[in-house]
Length: 197
Image 1 (tube, rainbow, N blue to C red):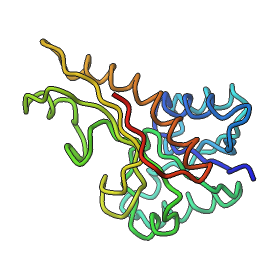
Image 2 (cartoon, rainbow, N blue to C red):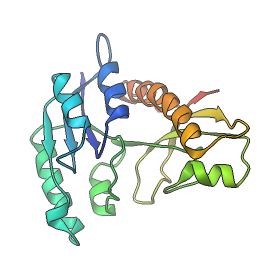
Image 3 (cartoon, rainbow, N blue to C red):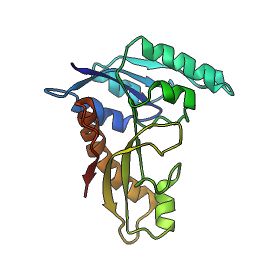
Image 4 (tube, rainbow, N blue to C red):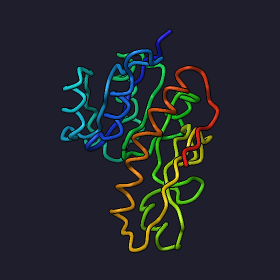
């Protein structure tokens, strides 16, 4: 049975594009919708150009009421009956109630080698700590921020003179390899972690 995948974005959608483009041929999943919380998210046009339905659930009218925003988001997702939910640059923290509904079926990519550098500004923090390597992690989403089971990691060496921007660009290139690889395995029922050098 082919898994139905919904992808949540907030911005350019580069990881979404990598995921959508990977779900072809004998892939065990297909994208059914891309949902953004910002109507100006550039990724919406990219998804539409690939023939994937798009939806917007703008978070701003729900300011201060995350439960109401998430209820609207869930109602929109229900229209497409996804089996797997992928967060791909979705810049909203989801409540435990929402996450629990998707237990075991929601993936996220984070730009650090978790458990190091949860949260934001990961590249600047890694450089400030003098790390020899950085990278990215695909993990199952749980109610605890960036603490779910690790499903894959890719490592990127820190180079002399790196800036957060240069490091971020190299890490993102690995994100576009790792996330599709993990999604394919999860959709096929394989949750063994992937480790890329």
